[in-house]
Amino acid sequence: MAERAESIHRLNAVNSEVALKRVKEFIRFLERKIKYFDEPPPDSVRKRLLEARFIPVLRKPRNFPLKWKSEEYENDALLAPKDVFAEDEKYLLCCAESLIGVFVSRDVKALLKLNKKHATLDHIAWQLKQALSSNVASFDLNAMEEIKTVIKSVYSYLQNAISRNGAAVKKLLKDKKFILCGRKFLYAGQLAFQVRDDCSPYLYQLPKQLADDFPKLMRFAGVRERFEEKDFVSSLHQMRGQFSENELDEENLRVAVRLANQLGETFGSNAGNPALLEEKWGTVYLPDSRAVMTAVSELCFKDCPWMPDEEGVHFVHAKIPWSSCDLLGVKTRREEALQKHMVRISFGQKEKLTTRLKRILQCYPCEKEILKELLQNADDAQATEICFIKDPRHHPDVKVFEDCWKPLQGPALCVYN
Image 1 (cartoon, rainbow, N blue to C red):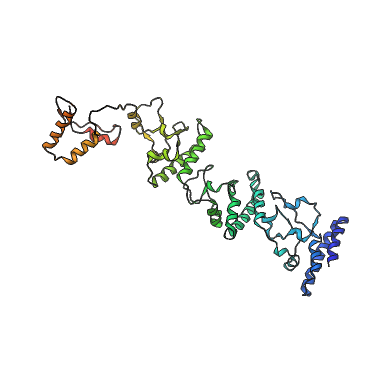
Image 2 (image 1 turned 180 degrees about the vertical axis):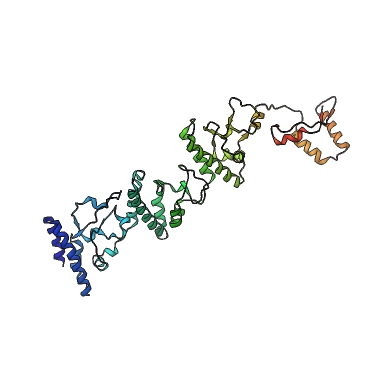
């Protein structure tokens, strides 16, 4: 039996077609021998069988886009059983190991110890490396189907390996763009299970099939349920870096608006203070009315269409609603106008005026004591007289700078020194 196996390699050097026929006949011979003779061959014979070069290798399929280990050999090459793997795990091994190119029954596989040879984590690492280095964007449909099959096989192996050797799996996937999304590989941090709006090519939703089939692996690798504030801020930063002070194209403008809205929702749901947004994450950029990414601190919301535009005033893009702008700390046009005309006036009273007036109203009864306090304030300011003016008028309040100014347009009592 061993001599027959060893003779096939010598015959192959003379006539490969005849050698291939002998291979098939020899394998059928092994099947019959195993079936009708219960005794396994002696160890010495089995060792010679494992080292005899009589196994043809599986050739690379026409549409397979990755490196194929058997390409290193001639088409008619024969290898020893110890140097090949069964075809069962083809998509886990084909880049790293040669595979059997003829049908071999389960019993013969056991005789040749092929049933004990399986893919290891090292094989998976090599298979994944070959896939990640390929240009998937250029593949045709058939090649894409092949690469998807390889990747899904790798994912399945890794998901099962987490319970056995989680540390090694995490090390293997660390800092790798290994998640196939459409026609590109992405980092785990670029994907989330739930995304309200499409924000690609900056943030992506995990494809449904991957979420259904490999949730354990995806979460283990770092795919989150939802994106966080820092993800939206970082994406807006990337857009600023990419476009600088140039206008966004239509598609990127749509993405910027979606990012802004989701950032506002996330920040608002976390009860964030808009005044602390930049302190927390640095400069936040939004598209202005020209579709140029601009710092939030330089933008204002056009809430007063009757007010004329001024040079140097940048409005946030009209597609971003006020609800998002408010949560992100964008000033209104009224606030912007007020800031340019605010002048600080020194006052002799050491206590903050608003605090003092509040204390007066809380502590004094609404009678003559308030009048006494007003006189005391005038005396503290070294005034020589105090004047009271009652104004019963109601002024229009539609175009006031802020809503808090509306009560000031009604009847009022003015007291001054």
